Image 1 (cartoon, rainbow, N blue to C red):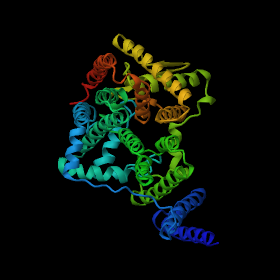
Image 2 (image 1 turned 90 degrees about the horizontal axis):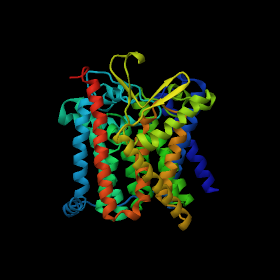
Image 3 (image 1 turned 30 degrees about the horizontal axis):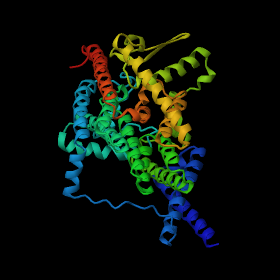
Length: 491
């Protein structure tokens, strides 16, 4: 009876607080009726869970989130640097590459929104670090992105005094951080520094990562949050740390939280812990989204119909279209996830045909009745053949281990994350490569787990090194083409 009474009082208190907040700060009664109902119900439900859980924790029940005790001293930092020096040097190398490319492609005086494989780099440069960037609309899929990016941009501006450079530096730093975390993840998992360097090199040189590590967008930050969550799972971190990491993923891009959920479900299939993680992350995430909307009126709430109407522009149910368009989208998405994510093809280049003068790059072209895909030539074809063999071998290894051990590990989480992204982007998004950092890590780590039995083989390591060298030249050709194409338009 006391539990029921406490639950009732928690809901009552949450409703009162939510109503006052929504009324005074979110213009409750100026919204459509359906928005009003959902706003009250959602904010009450999220706050009720938090209030009830905190009250239970205070009363001595075991519902509180444990927080790890973190101590940092000079010896620990020095030991960390010595142990992780190869990964740090690799990250610094890629930082230099991303920064060089980023300075060429992110032009502060030119609006290149949608020109570079549909990336909104011009507007994200403003959102992250421009003094007035917070006035730009923040769409629902990014629930509290300004809370994450604006403080970083402000700190960087203190040193650079030039907002566009601040945004480029933050983006390239996030890209380099991903490379370092990828090295750390593989090193911890397989205890092989050479293998870790090869996989991290493949990751940093992949088309998805080298492109979005250079082009200012939100997706490289999403990749960093997803890999950071994996590191916490790998380290058997407490639920509180996982919730904090999940909130970072949730706040940057809403749908990526599903991949966090898949990870904890596969590696820790204890329903109570899974529920606590999901409930805490969603509840606090909703409350932060409400505060974000109050602080930044230009932001939209993802759970309100008025906040997701803009997403209809990027969504289409492909199975209601002509068959050629349905099959074309499926093939394009498969090619993007399995090939373009790793090996850059020759892009299609548009100018007047899309109503602009600055060149626009895409990995496909649609004409009546036909999907045309970006293809490979010469070295690209060789790389694709090698990569196809690698994917096939990794897939066989995954199935063999699953049948032999009948035990799920992170390989299954990676495979499910790839399937989730495939299903999501069948009907969402114009250029699917735009979202490639959301699955690029999963694809490469899936391959790394599959090829792990060969990790210590010197011939295999040499073969991978040759593949990386060839891939580096292919990616160089890709960017050389872009630089040559845009050179008449940029300084």
